Image (cartoon, rainbow, N blue to C red):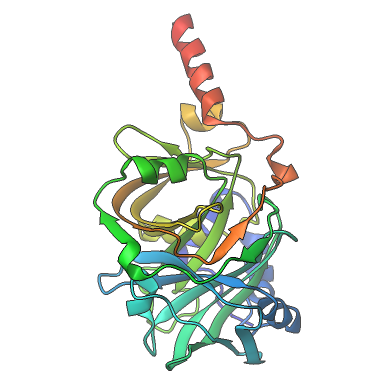
Length: 327
């Protein structure tokens, strides 16, 4: 067990929600320093894993590794072996060195199962790398869209990658139609030996278009009711840097976005967005568009039933217009 599973950012948000006392009690049992057998078996059946890493400047990035099931396997409860490496154009590629912190998310969208593991790269070789567990925990199935991946051949080379300082029309299109994104965050003291001070990568889901792109490129996403661990938002509370990954499930395109994020806890927009308990507002720092970089495709998604009672940005706009006309 992890004796101190929550850091100051997580504890502050837990206290605001009135769950700090309960999570302080059960946290050491929830946040393990080993993988239970169920997680070890689960990771081994996946054809892809989401990874969170840090570049040399401390900027978090979210990435995805894909290979036939079995490429992730666990030799023992404290280690996960990944028989895959990131492509040269992927931010993860340069970050994979011995001793580097890493966050991993195993997610099976068609069954809506997911488990997380944060740790340290203990070994790396020409075939892949091994991660030593620091935190291992499960997540609920809420807000995962059910879609099943199918391999379609080799991913395209890193020569297809295109970097940008601001979102272009194609990047906006990928974000504006998205019903899913992944977000990597990190504690500012990552690497100091504290298990709660690491890199984390998480899933976010909503109705298509749930991430709003403003004219100036600001991204805003609702944060719905969850497990109240606040791993992602707790990191952002103490370190605003984050990395987003949007997957175009039809083309295999990957859009990596570096942002500075803030958690919005009150205001008219939050009140107007049905189901949102907080908003995540993000300023784009840079982006990387990698065409057909993922050798997986998915069919039509079945939206999570938990989204039935959530709103849209179009509804927020209409409410704002109505309020303006009254005044």
